[in-house]
Each structure stands twice: as C-alpha cells, then as structure tokens.
Image (cartoon, rainbow, N blue to C red; front, side):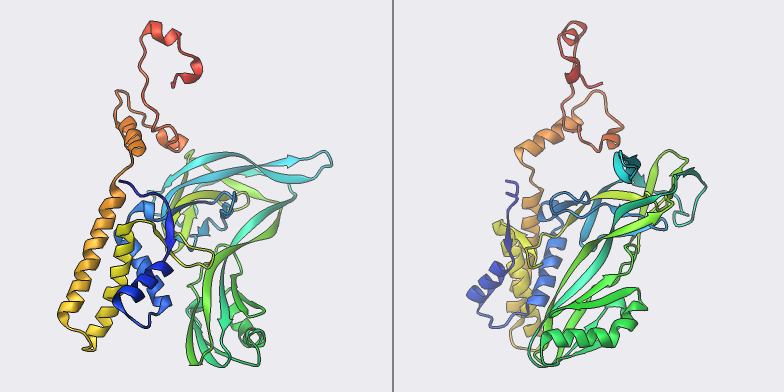
Length: 391
C-alpha cells in the first residue's frame, strides 16, 4: 500500500528509543541530523512536502531575480519545476501604477556552458515610475536560553563569535549585537535582536549564507536555531527588463544560486520543490508509517551504539545488529514509499497508453498528462461537446 500522507513528530521516535533500549541521554540536535540523513537515504518523495513559491496560504513569495540570479530556498531538497512570472503594469483611475501578474512561462534547464555570462538580448523599455514588489531574504534566528556562561556562534558569514551572558537573555543578545554588528554587516548580514532572540538577515535576497550554529562553551548558555526567509517591501524606480531572443527562458542551479537568462526589474520566478516536513518549532516530522518509524528508530540506535562501540562500552555484535536493522528498515521504507496507490497507477497508465504521444506536455506543466486519450470515429465525434475534445 502507498503512504497515507500523514506525519508524526520525531519526538515520538525519541521516546520509543528511550522506552525500548533504555538510553538515558540523547542529543536532540544531533538526533535531528540523523532524521534528515535517514529521510535522504530513503529518498522517497512522499517523505517530503511540496512547496510552491506563490505566496498562497503559508507558501513563500515568488523569487526575485537580481543580477541574473536568485538564492536557492534554504529548505529545498529537490527542485521539481520552475516558471517565469510575467508582470504587467496597471494604472488605476487615480493614475497610480502597480504590477500585476499577467501570465506564466515555462522554464527549462540551460544547456549553455556560459550560462553565468550575460548573453545577447534585447531591451523592452518600461515607462519610468515607482513599482512595489516583495523581496525574499534569508533569515536565521537563535532563541537564547540559560542563565550563565558563554557560547560560540559560528558558520554564518564565516565568522566565529563569542556570546557572553549578562544579567538577562535580552541584555545578552543586545550586547552581542553591539559588539559584532559591524563585523556581520561587512559580510552582508544584518545582525539584530528581539528580546532573547538573535536575528541574522541577509542584506539582499540574492545573498545566501551558511546556516548559523550555536555551541555551549561554559555554564548553560545555549539556544535553538530556526531557518527561514522574510518578506520586505522594496521600491524600484525606472525599471526595465530583458527578454530572451530564443523565445524561452532557462535556468541553472549552481553553488546555492539559481541563474536565469533574464535580468531583474520584473524578474520573478515561481518554483515547485520538495522540502522536509517540519512542525511549528522547526523540528522534522516523519511519515506516519511503521517502516519509516522503525527506520528512524534504528538509525538513532545505530548512531548511539556506534559511539558506544568506539569506546568499548558494547560488543561488536550489538553494534552490527543495530546497523543491520537500520539498513533493513531503510530499504523496507523505500520499497513501501515506491508502491503507488490505485489512483496513481491509473494516472501512470493514462500517461503511457496512447497511440498519439503528446510531446509538449511541459508547456501545460503536465496538467493533463493523466487524462486518458479519447478516440472517435467521424459519427461519434460529432456527438461529443467540443469542450471534451482534447486537440
């Protein structure tokens, strides 16, 4: 049977490890890394969630292209598709100018070896004016905890900084901002604080920095990190945009950026990609399936047993048993997730069982690939409404 689409928090797996194996201490930060590793090793799309950058519901906004590139979303696991958002200027009855989505155009992966270079394009002038749109910027946060000591903040901006407790967590965060604000700004990162929260924000949406990390040094000063993006209003005056003369739009992903063959101004792209499923606190969630739960549980047990075996606390046989169980359940979960439902099997059948192949399904984003082919003779076709005839 296929997966049911439900997810459970990884804390329930931690509790089963406590209960069944009897370990007294489990590092949750490292445990989350193990969960992400297992989901990646299983490699099944139903273990992730689909995200569309269309600003609907809780989805992020379309990505703005600046200098022919935009940053890859920090939570993206695999990109499914990309399309360009075409905007037109609209003037209301009072003469105010705004931008409105007029249509979408499919994008394909570039085959050009010089995709990072500016190519021959032609300009289409846009009347001068002020246009409001949204910029998507990376933002990492650390929620501080503890009552004494020091901690080390690393990775972000390539800097390593020392955080020292001072009277309250709010004062601790404020003092850290005062001490290191200029250093982070030189790395294109705006450092700020809100009560006990340290906030690291990219100065531009096209900038992507390494995820922030906090490690306790002395006392109990520590924190929980969350990674996200923010929406901030931006104004651009006198825009113009470039149009590719090959009549299609291309992109290439490289080193944390999505490179496009069109420039900024009205440059936005909409993505559909897979991402890890997380709860309200940013903790990973696991498909609600016995095989997935067992795979994660035995991965955690194997991870702990490996460290204990390395220092001689348990025998090789115990560690090897945990390793075998982990591998077996990872393979079992992968097989379970690969089984399509009856409805999905019907869609797959309709995609392949055709006498006339549709070679341009990408133009409609594969929306009708699961629609069965209809065959008519001359008499029967005349009795079918035109709306039902796919030409």
